[in-house]
Image (cartoon, rainbow, N blue to C red; front, side, top):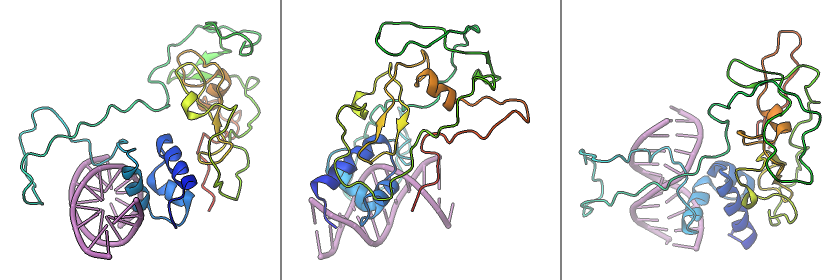
Length: 226
DNA sequence: CCCTGATTCGC
DNA sequence: GCGAATCAGG
């Protein structure tokens, strides 16, 4: 297989989304993990948290291995400051229990902080919802297409990776690399990377035994097809 | 062992 | 330019 424009574009997109080289290779098909990594580097997009690169501290005395001759003082490659990826917030500021009729998400952008429909705060500081508040367990990811999308993964009109910022919901809709993949894009629940609705999905409370229901799959959590 | 990404180097 | 082989950390 060769690196067509489309395949390169897919590679770029997936790589920047943080998919592993293996996943990308699998998705593209016809290429190995190494090929993906090699191509990614040749494209200039590199540096993503590598497991093998954590060693870069100030004043590193030991300079042992020099497998290749004629390589005196290797310039310390500064690991690019990797922007924190959308993960769970360290410690959400617990808000007093307030309930609001409707979370205004449509129409106005301006700050309307506070008052998500929090019932109580769980042990880990997570939102605990009452069973009644639990939303229907609609999986965030729609049924997966069986045909891997070759065409451009860019979508007009939808929230793409480039549109992400601190104020909009980063909940993924669909699967990375597919043509209709995008992000939720709603205004976030302040202090969280997701909107109120998706916070409810992302942070599942431990409800009393018996009242628990099967949790919806987390983003990307489902078993990969193929 | 498995995984990961980085790098090298023959093609 | 490509990617298998190799390296090296988790």
